[in-house]
Image 1 (cartoon, one colour):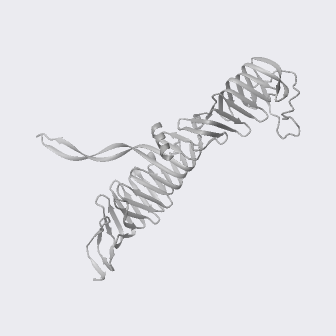
Image 2: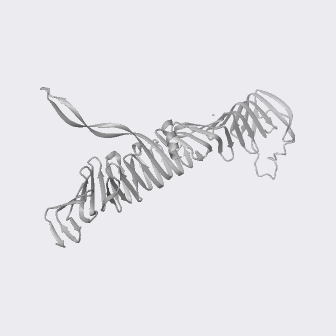
Image 3: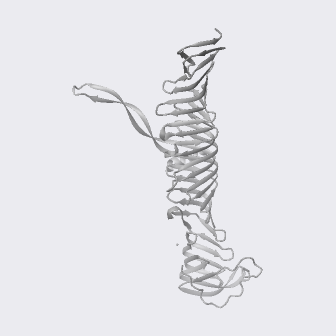
Length: 453
């Protein structure tokens, strides 16, 4: 299913109140029993009116009622909520029910929401409004930005301050386009809850998961269970090219010049839970992933229990839990319990039991380095380890206080009173040079041997 969704993503990539008209009192509405003294439900203030009125008696649910047909600017007020339409059929003087047709609008300025539709059914006793015929929900979010939600069926529960949407639900607000089979909007919390793997399309990002909660005021999206994120970006890489310069004597000098190229990159994120903060006036965008986290990038693979990704294209990473970071280009793996990766500064830092594994072309471990801390300087293509450095290769153990791994030449220089243990003997010297892929070791500067001759 992940690959199917991935394919879709890439290809996709508003009071005026008047009293009711004076009509003889209506008697047979005890069926609703909303004025019964024993009822816990309080009496709801309601008024209605229109430009023209027709009164008649009809049978509703087997009981005769006086009904009022309103035409031309017809309206009903339920507390502070205004319902309007081209025509409204009102059941009972107290508007126990209302059937709205044509140009339906439901305005709740207190909650900053507006509904439009072709038809609606108002139920005073249940305090619900059932909208159909291309219904639309509009509500305001951060900076009064309008959010639009459409669905075949929309039902508003006024006492619960929630809206239930059924069918093909589509939400649009400028930051996202969300498609789902159903959804519930909680007005007081400003939260839009979606179930059954909604599809969330943003600017160069796609998100899905079993359940999503979107708050368009705080600009926070939370997704639970089987979270998948697809991030599209254009990243800069440096390449070497040869440029020809012609001298005054028509002689050509060849020189290497480093240039930058833009390439399209797709990054996949998997996790059990996601909290995605969109950029606001006071906060920068970031992703917080928790539980079985994996990040698949063309240059690396990250795995762990949690990660925070932030910065441009979410390339900066940090965690305070156990992790693994495999550099697929330079063939090494960083491990530990505290990790900071600043792509924007070409810098990585590992502490709390850090470990560096040197890998061959088949991603098999050839040697392991441990230390108090490990730093990587990507622009210099160097990895520096400090404090009680131990390097274990296939048949030797080297110890020292400071080590530098040069990624291009694939060699380690170990310093700080280094020593080498191999085949029962121990050698101390000023410097140990190791080549982890070939298991070659070079000792230099004041060699002292102990153990077997």
